[in-house]
Image (cartoon, rainbow, N blue to C red; front, top):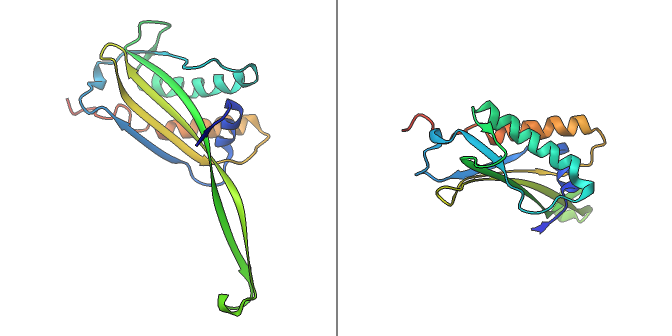
Length: 170
């Protein structure tokens, strides 16, 4: 998987195929004890990616606030960061007349780009990662930034649907 700029991640939001969501968490973490969180930027944001950076953070902010966590500038119970990547897959299509053994069929191939947005949540007091989630989707260029943001919100809502992961188990 090659790493890309944030601009390419915006494409994650406008795909024709369903989002693939995965998450894992530290089963020993007491998620009900966490009350505050803060953003930690693992790398500087390029000037051309600032709007997308704001959109991603806003979509995550909405989810964490909706779960009862309060954002702080420093000293949070949790630290949140994100990163993105794009991978490529080959898609093969076959078309023609009659059965394949007639030889009157054509096969075409195309490259499909799949964008992945990864959100990581770290417990600085325990010095360990406590939650990591990813949303992946086939990339498709969309010109409507409002639609892209709504799709990003949907992806983050699905990603944080089970937060906190062990609620009610303590």
